[in-house]
Every structure is written in structure tokens, then in C-alpha cells.
Length: 237
Image (cartoon, rainbow, N blue to C red; front, side, top):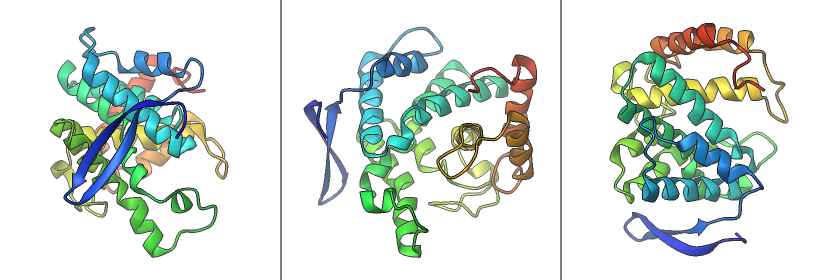
């Protein structure tokens, strides 16, 4: 990965090391946008942690271009949902940071699997699924256990059919349940190369259909309520 200086070596498991580029050269204007997204609710920027999170976000964007802009948008939406739910500034801060690096574990996924244009085999899908647990391991090296828990569990399902630990309902950290709704919503309204973007109304209808199975109904309702207060067009491009 070109354009970076300095290395951070992480120790996810005994005998396995991942070397990350600490600083990457982002696209013009991207760093400023990310830093704005990461501004703490209290207004006081915690520089070392913010810089580490920013560096990690650039690492995953270098490996998976799809995440460029996606993670910061998920962070933005997650913060709004968390505020609507009534969480504290400290709790919202952890959720914002976790959302920015929720896919950092994808650095452990082989690029030929990550970018495969056709259907994945069962073995390849297991490799993709491993990114949640690997992301948590990476963040634990930064002594950020609360953020690591959110990242580890953001693919759990409310009905217990998710991964990696098959947690159910309230067993899933609330921050992870919030990130799951924020990511699902943003993916739908953003669209992709193989799926057309949906309207806000269509995305909300899909989220409601998944309430109680994949997603936490309380969190889906919080997003709906926030949109009703602030308007559909806010942040949706």
C-alpha cells in the first residue's frame, strides 16, 4: 500500500501478526470529512484515539474501495440513532468510532475473496464472516474493549441467527444493534454496482420487515422517528 509512512504492528493472536500502514494518503478532502464525522459529542477531540481510528479507516479503504465514504456515513447515521435512543455522549462516542472501523477485520480476508464478482463458496463466505471477530481482535490491541465489542457483534441478528457468537436480542450490545441498522439503511439508500439505490421510504419498509428477526425493533423505530423529525433528505444523497 503506497502513500504511507510509519507502521503499526498488531498482534491479533499468538503466532500471527498483521502489519498496518499507520498513515495513508486519502483522496482530497476525505480526511477532513472523516475528522468532522469523528468529532466527539462533548466537543473535545481525543487526538491519539482519533488518529488511530482514522488511520485504521484508511487501511481498510485501501484494501476495499467500496468502504470509502461508507464507514463515515454509517458512523453519522449510528450517532443520530444513538441520540434518538437517548444514549449518553460517552456511549455515542464509542458507537461513532466503532462504526468507522466496523469493517477493519476485512484486512484479514484475501483480496480475491473480498472482490470476487461471482457467488461465494461456503468456505469463502466463512472467510468474509471472520472479519467481525478479526476486527475486534485488532481493536483490543488498542485497549478499546467497548468499541471492540460493538465491532465483533455488528453482524449478530436479533433472532440469534447471526455471527460470530449467535447472540440474541438484548444479549447483543446495543451499540452493535445500532450499527447494524445504520449500515443496513445506508447500504440500501446508497445502492451498489449490482443493486439500485432505494428511496428512504423503501429502505425503512425493508428495515421494518426485518425488525424482530435480523434487527432490533427499538433501533429501527428510533431511525424512523429521527427521520420524521429531521426530514428524509437529510444526509441522504
